[in-house]
Image 1 (cartoon, rainbow over the protein chains, first blue to last red):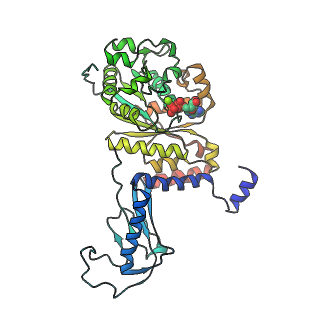
Image 2: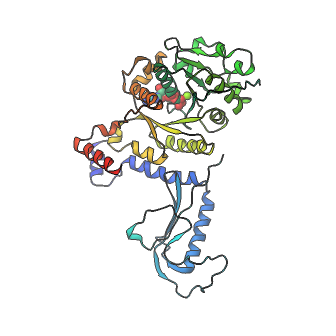
Length: 135
Length: 279
Ligand SMILES: Nc1ncnc2c1ncn2[C@@H]1O[C@H](COP(=O)(O)OP(=O)(O)O)[C@@H](O)[C@H]1O
Ligand SMILES: [Mg+2]
């Protein structure tokens, strides 16, 4: 590490490459392990947003649906800041494609993701288990 | 292929040494671990399953003593003892040399199983030096093992490839799978310019069997054809390989992270306290 690097680091301008490697690896492994192709992931992301938007108005700009990984388990994490609920948007008896109980806050599917960020109480989180790797 | 229906004694451990990526230290680990186990009194056979790019013979200094190979054993044109090359300085260790690269055209997982089970009959440990990649060569070698050691370096591409291999081993039900982290540079880790030991074990979620630092002596010993573990524990890497052997045998040898060793006494004490508080 040169002196310049060191000063940059002190000023917090430059992330150490070790930490960068860790972050990049975790992201790429989340995709490797899930074995979802980017196109499918994008389609799923759009559909999830559509479903959620039926119930609540979400901030699409800061919304984010992504894969995260830890301990060889991959989680689908949707972080969708809610602007406000849409009280009259959906009749009480939702269609067959719309299971009851998926309203407002909470979880979609079986969550294995226990971390909750206190700053994002209005976030939706969902997780899918890691599918078995192809043979 | 002739089929030898070998009945393997339950005690023989057949361990695959694999990594996905090439050049991360599989063959070096196989040679050093083989010698270390033999020195500890275990009857050990190392199998060169890297038919395409074989060099386990070179690392062991046995390249001029090969007459027959796994190929002749499988063809039934030589006896097993004729193909096994006993190490000149460590009689508890033998090498099963890889055959001609053209063997790759017809070799099957069952062939590798046959060879491994045959040598397992007369040994305590069988180490299989796996080729790089996740294709047929890997599948052949993996079919023959009962457990595995995945070796990686703290570099992104090596860790990513290791992850893929671990997934394949898991899907084949191979258990246990343990991790050896090779070529760690304590100074770079301390400067946070390299993935830390904890980073790699967290990401791969495997128990750590050993930690080998970057050590020039590895290259010197390769030049000589004498694995470091032949000369005891004279260098840091040699110590690490011997410790891997001892942990494999179930000895509780503590793992020391060299990049944390240089931290202050206070930091180390705090880490200890936190650890004992958790357990
Ligand atoms: N701990 C180490 N320190 C320094 N060099 C090493 C270390 N481990 C392996 N090497 C070197 O790395 C290269 C690749 O090692 P090798 O065992 O042949 O890898 P693989 O069998 O996985 O392809 C060799 O030149 C070897 O000397
Ligand atoms: Mg090799």
